[in-house]
Image (cartoon, rainbow, N blue to C red):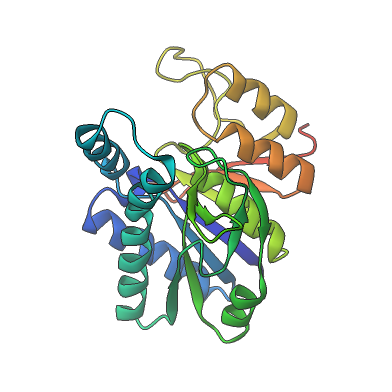
Length: 245
């Protein structure tokens, strides 16, 4: 039995059918005996929609209130995923960042995680409940909702994995792993079975969008094994860790 954090991005949650596919993937892991914590992004296009609403409201938003609006997309995803899992007979519970809590600094819009309280999540796991966490969000020390910047759900997943002492953090995307080169531009690009944290950081710094840069740094610092794999294929992905052969 493994304890795994599974993070699903917006493309993986693009509509209800895709969300059902994700729920089935989670169910497969539960059936294998794994303890699973799920971290979800907002559904595809939702974050842009919420940002657009803020920009239409005023030219320059109060960042604390901006975070309240921007965090709503992940809340919807977490609630829907818990509903779908429950309907499949899997005990599940949604969690927002402030409920856990995931404590951050007060740099609203680009907050950094300071602490993840693991007690409630571990209690769920011990009771056979799948915690479904709204990614990208936390709460500052004054109790205000905060967001972690674009791609911040990856950061949530890694921080949660460290807090619950997970064996691995799986990042599900719309690609089956990390490639030697951009496969859209280089026909000979090959999927890598494994890559080091430092090599992944280099790729991210050159513009590769597979993983959030801050999330890779945190995984390296906390020694959290990552796996990048596709939500749409039943294939092994790319392991990201200390060394690659």
